[in-house]
Image 1: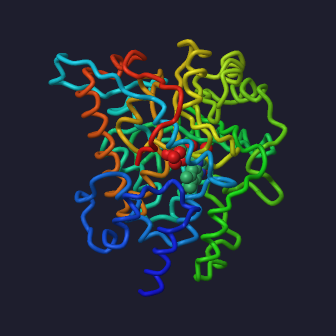
Image 2 (image 1 turned 30 degrees about the vertical axis):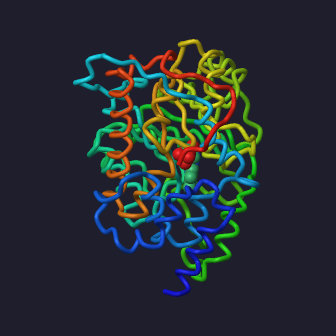
Length: 397
Ligand SMILES: Cc1cc2nc3c(=O)[nH]c(=O)nc-3n(C[C@H](O)[C@H](O)[C@H](O)COP(=O)(O)O)c2cc1C
C-alpha cells in the first residue's frame, strides 16, 4: 500500500503526465479508494483520477502517453482555449435534440466512441463493456483493428451497426481480408487510419512500463489480436509505409462500406481526400500519439471544414473532455466528435458502468451548453456561436 501511495505521488508530480489536470491530482489519493459508485463521479477528470488508481502502471502508461514531449497531447487540450462560445438568449430551449446522422449511422448524441486498441488492458469488460455502454446510451462506436475482442462479438453486444477502424497492414491481401471480415460482421463504414506510417516515440509509456513490477511476459508473449486470426502476422507491419491516396479507390473496389479517412490535419489533405473518393474525413492526430506537430485538432478544424465546404461529413477527435469542447467543434462544422481516453478511464475505473457514466456526464454538459447558448438542435449550432481569439488562453481542465 505504501508503495502504491508512493507511486501515485510520483504520478501526480510527474511532468510526463501532462494531460492530467491539477484538479484530478488533488483528488487522486482519496477518490479511488472512496468512490465505489460511478454515479458519484462528477466529471471526466475525476474519472481519470479513479482509473489511475485501478489500471496497472504499464497499461496506464500506454493509455496516457503522447509522443516525444507530449506537446501535441497538451496542444489538443490547450487548443480549445483559443475558441470562445458566444451564447444567444431568449430562445425556447425547453426541448433539446442532440441526435445526429452521419453516413446513415443514427445516434442519440454527436459524441462517439473512438477506436482504442487492447481494451482488455483496462478492464475485463473490454470492448464488450464499451459496446454495451454505447448501446445503453445510443452512441455510435468505432472498433479498432487491434481490439481485444472480435468484431463479430462487438457488433452483437452493440446490437446495431458499428464502424470498423482499419490498420491496413503492408500486405494487400490481408487488408482485403480485414475489410471483408468487418463488412460481413455488419460494419457499415471503415475508417482507414493514415497517421502512423511507421513508428512513434511514446516516452511516457516507456517510463511507466519501467515502474511496473509485474511480470508481463506471459500475457504478451505470442499474443495475437482476434482481428488477425487466420492471418500469419509474422513479419507483417500493422501499417503500410507505401500507402498513397490511391488506396481509397483500391478499397472501394473490394468493399461496399463507406470509406472514412482518419488522421487528416491539413486542408490540402482534406481536399485530396474528397478528390480521391472518401465518404467522410476524420480530423485526428491519434490523440497526440502520432506525429509531434504541436497543433491541437480543434486548431486544424477550421481550415479543413473550409476546404471540404460541406461536400462530405467532417468528424474530429483529440482532447475532448467537456461538453463545451464538443460544442465548439460542432459550431466549427464537425458532424460528430470522438472521445478516446475518457471512456477508457470509465472502463478502467468501473467497467461498462464507468463508460456509461462518462457518456452521461459529457451528454449532460453538452445539453447544458446547448441550452445556455440558445441552440436546441445540433443543426442550430453554427459558426456564429464560436469565436477564434487567435491565441491560446487558460488551459481548461
Ligand atoms: C490507448 C489508445 C489506443 C488507441 N488505439 C487506436 C487504434 O487502434 N486505432 C486508431 O485509429 N486510433 C487509436 N487511438 C486513437 C483514438 O482513436 C483517438 O484518435 C484518440 O484517442 C482521441 O483522443 P483522446 O484520447 O484525447 O480523446 C488510440 C488512442 C489511445 C489513447
